[in-house]
Length: 157
Image (cartoon, rainbow, N blue to C red; front, side):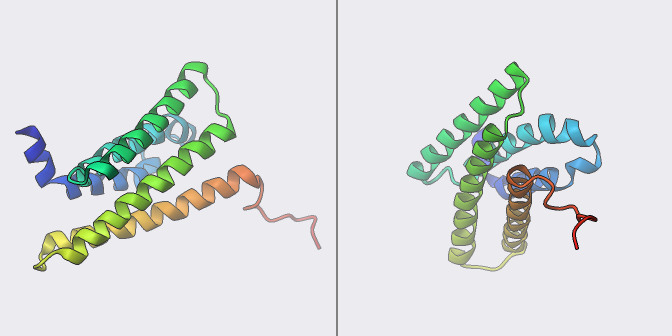
């Protein structure tokens, strides 16, 4: 009963988690959001993505494994109070793979839909938000691997 109600609004739930990922930093301090809130929002996003792909059992289990890996790494970071770049890169790799799977599934569902409705445009909007999140992933990974790469060096040239 609850599953059917959630499944009906699966795209709206996923869209709200994407908006929280993209615009949540406007409402919370940067360090608190980046290291405490953002991993929790990503975990909620994975759960809502699992709801989107719940009809495909093989892909569902892959996403459940990705959720478990991400939750384990986030939990160990919170318990031991560490912020290692290796754990962050592993989490971003998990998120990247997850968003690739969900994006592929959303595009497939939109492509196979028989009629055009407002919901179809919502799916396309979610796909665009996912592309924006990919861009954020690349910026974070670049910032972790090449610290200082976004600052202009005044001593150069």
